[in-house]
Length: 131
Image 1: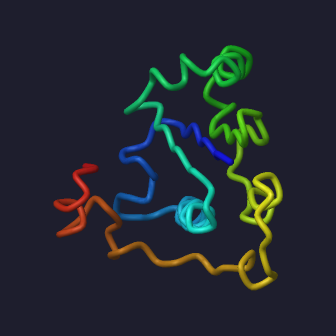
Image 2 (image 1 turned 90 degrees about the vertical axis):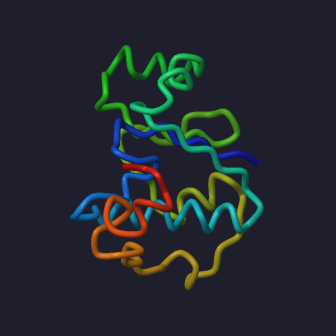
């Protein structure tokens, strides 16, 4: 099973960067990591860094033509669009990817960013190269 995420333009691949990290993006990044740990192949594409992926994926291109950037993020599971214009919950993605999840696994609190400044501050930025 494969989950593909087509994100709007962000400063780094996950959007979990800058002085104020959006908790929704931190939660979503954690959810994707969890899916990967369950054996799901996860691919994530950032419009500002990988525009070719958006053009070469017909369904994403059609959504962008119809709705512009409001269509983003687009989440595809098994080659099928499952979500557009919002980040889905862990439980939704687990269901779409046929991954069993316990109640504890779907109610994970948002983890704090690696540092108070996310990936764009201090040593974290130097290691990630995202900024």
